[in-house]
Length: 319
Image (cartoon, rainbow, N blue to C red):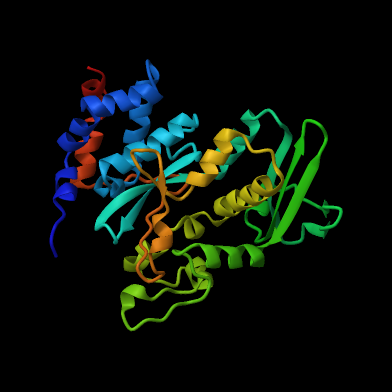
């Protein structure tokens, strides 16, 4: 298999630093970020790359473009914040790995709040035994929420509820069952499957979501289940509920429209979006996504050189 020269050259600290210190790149960053915020922006990129070593294999331009879009929206790509994620994606059509821009549910909340139109905005997982009724006509919900947080955290989720109220009093709410959310994820995510997939080539076989939750898969196949829908189903469900609710009935600021349009896309240098996920077949997709909660930084020769040069990357850029 031929090695892509651009990817081979990408896998060292010098190439990352060299790219960030090119005059054209520095001008591009300064035009969006500018001034003292540049240090924070570069640090957030370094943090994202450290948290997901697969990003080191992505093209520099796709990483920078995705991060710049988040910065233009005043959202950080730092994985610990859960606002925006840089998601490594294997674009087989081009033979390279690229970084996708992915909006986290906390990013939706931030952008909605900043519009100044929302008095209330909430999304919640409903646990087994809590739901009394939900009337889709009046959009009224009656629940008996558990007071024991530990018990609630360890009780199975049966559905998701989201609502907003404008400052002028207009309200909108919706409820989805867990089954409906599973069907939605199975239909629209190329990396998630509710039922098991059998294939003569073991590489393309998948266990069912139920077996995944039970841990009934080999450790060597963990990469198959790296989608957010596997790692943080509730987080993706929250994002789906907010997107459905706000995009259909909410007041959309320019920033929110831009973020929704670019969600799950590779951002080009000219600012256009390329939705590469939809170009791949379900058997060929390899999506490596970051967890929104505790991030474990893997160590590799490339990772070590990046970690050991965090300060020098920033210094080289600004000096």
